[in-house]
Image 1 (cartoon, rainbow, N blue to C red):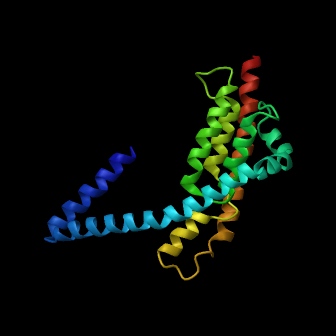
Image 2: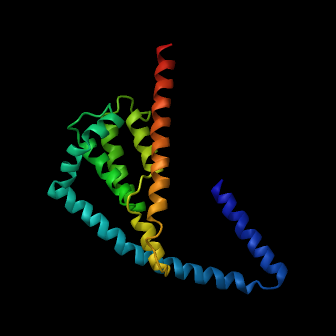
Image 3: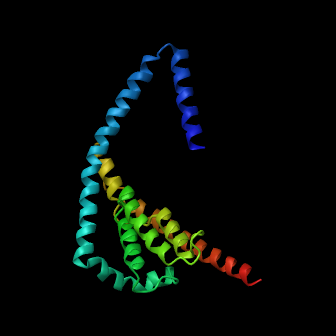
Length: 197
């Protein structure tokens, strides 16, 4: 669907430029946008490498394990089907930590690792487990303490105060995360009641 929307927007823009007799604007816009995208990507590579490196060092230094112990009650509440000392717990902590740091796309490889660990304890391999659904929902809501990627993008785009978005991001992501947790619990209760019948 999203591809059709993009196709509609591009075709409409090209036809409108042709109708106005300024078709050269389309070419100029496409080339300048492509150059801008490549430049922005290179600026973001540094930020992503920095945070991923910090997360790897934290994992090797045992900091992730330390946070895992501190957050263990909360994680056990959110993921009751995952054993306490299973590697999936550490992977989930890393995903949630990366989300809290607002690392954006850098969360993806950590999320894949966590899903692989959760799949190893999934009893029905063809279906997503409750823990997998909860993790996906939490990642989608993306509770963020420091929106590092957004700050980097705003900084790269020349914003005078790139960190002014922190407060609004914190409030919105907290509300979204709370909504997701409540919805997850309600769906689990509904599913368990249906299974009992």
